[in-house]
Structures are given as C-alpha cells and as structure tokens.
Length: 294
Image (cartoon, one colour):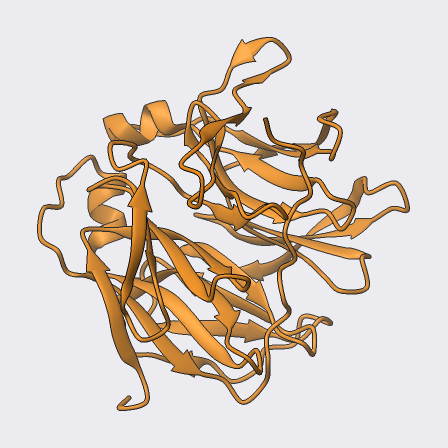
C-alpha cells in the first residue's frame, strides 16, 4: 500500500482522463463541481467548469480540448485558449437529460452512454439508459437501449469487443460489427456496483465498484483473474498513464458514498482522493477523439 500516493482530493471524484500531451490528469468532482487537473506528482494544473456538477466522464480531443459529460450533454473546454462550447446538447431534437461515460470509436468519434441525472439528483429510481455513437462528422447512431444505468465503457484494441458497465447489474459484453454496430449482448460480469472500467495491453478488463476497494480483473474470455487491491474506500474510475503506461490513476470515494448518493443523501466532507499507483502490465492507451471544434 505504500506504493500508492494521493495526488488530489475532493468531495466525490468521478470522471478521469490522462492528457498525455500535457502530462496532466484531469478529474471531476460531481458534488463540488468542476474539472481539475494535476501533474503526476500532484502539482495543480488548472480548473474549469467549476460551477458544473455531475460530470461523470472525461476524455481528450486531438486539438487539446477536454471533453466532459454531465447534465445537458457533452461540453468541450480548451485549457490553453479558455474557449469552450457544446459538442452535443440534444438527441433527436430533444434536450439531453444526462450523459455519463465516453470512449473513442477509433475513427475520430466516440461511443457514449446516457444517464438519468434528473432522477439521480432527486435520489429516485432512475429510468433505463442507452448507448450511442457520435461520429467525427456529428452523426448520431443509436446502438443499444434498455440498459439500467450505463457507466464505464471500453472498446478493445482489436476493435471487435465492446464493454459497458450497467451499474447495479454488472458488465455487458458486445460483439462489434465492421460498421461499429453492437450485437450479441451478453452479461460478462455479474456485479452489483459496477462503475468505472479500463483495459490493459493484454486485453484484461479492469472494473471498479462504488462499494469495492479493489479492481476486478477478467481475461477477454471472461475468466476471473486476481483482484488488484488498493487503499481506497471504494473506486469510481481508473485510467493508465505514465511513460511506460504502467501508472494507474484512480478515484477513491468513501465506502458508503455511492449508496449515500443513490439514496438521495448529502456528502459534504472532502474524503475523496485521486491516487497514483503502479501496474505490472501497461494499460491500453485511450486515443483522443478528432472532432472539429469551433
């Protein structure tokens, strides 16, 4: 456990992205608001969208802009210029309730999952959510529906398997067609607190849980590998970084934090931390999207 270092803190850290070009780790605080950056040693590297709560997903665009999800859709912010805007604020002509996690589609666009932020804020039972693809030229393609609560997403290096956490059920696995449609949905992992997700270079799926202080790890064939223990209370998200890809960054929250939010409770103490650790295996590098942003 001495090999883990706390490099940032907040009330409830959620979204996470490694900005390889700037050597910055961006993270969100869904309760205190905003997206915040730190260097690997914990040196602050700037903040933005400080009044925006419920940012569940963060990823990079090729021009250096940071994409972030949440209430109303997907925003972009360029930390160098200070410019910002909306990448996506409606679906099929309707305002967006919420979007949670994102994953690049390998062709410049992204996959993303909707979420029911309206009910999350109320602490009420959420309505079913969906998976979508937004192409690099802004075409929206619906991929799957009837998912309880979309969360962590991953697309493997071979471009033929896609994974989606369904928070209170587990992890779905899909086959991916040549035109990036999803088919043959099947439960890959039964887990009642499935939250964040990442892949390593061997294709192993790493899954966090909002009640779990370890990473659940599964081989591509679904066989269970040894858990990866951490000093966290529980874990919302993880990403790999570092020059060799073996640094592991993850957001820790109190062990009962996720259930407190689920039940409509209030969290006020800054007992959530961004940790840095090390892995024996490098992670799969998440490439930026390639949207043309005004």
